[in-house]
Length: 255
Image (cartoon, rainbow, N blue to C red; front, top):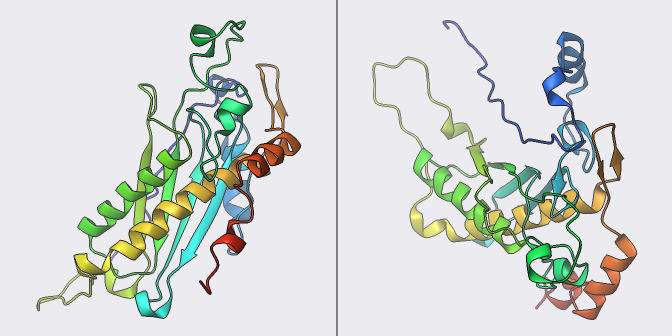
């Protein structure tokens, strides 16, 4: 069969506000512990793992996930998204101007009479998109771009310091190529006209994954700084004010 290897892709976001990453805290013991804890099933969200230090819109962020399943009439495929937030903007949830209502937005000290708190809400986000749809590399790239559109719905405008990036992959068996073959290899791939439902699902799942990261996050305090969790009760009041809650009842599967 030949030699088989696993080539990991390692990414990061700068959580230096709370994490002294220059001290090189992650050593062999932590790496192997993390590998030993890896498992299938649901993913922990909020201030866990690599989500312990980062922020979102000036509040505590972290790890978030979400997914969408297409109905059989649209192919029945699934798309899942995992995010590690560490970026800024003006938070919007289901169209409600949360960032404005909470007085948490960029350049505030330049726009209104307010003391500058020195709390940068710039940064980056890592997004991983997985789907079981049979996609070639070109359409996986197109899916990744739609994930950024979902990010924009949350209030991001991809500031100058944002190193936002997306990795997209397919788990469909046809996406696997034989290592050697003397004959042409036949693979399945959706045509462009079938991509729109996956695009919509990717954008929606990315948006929701960010919200889940924020809602599950807890306040984190270290010797370097502090990141406060978003005030949930105040957030609920804002969402109710703008009729941005219970969307599963307003737009249901039945009509």
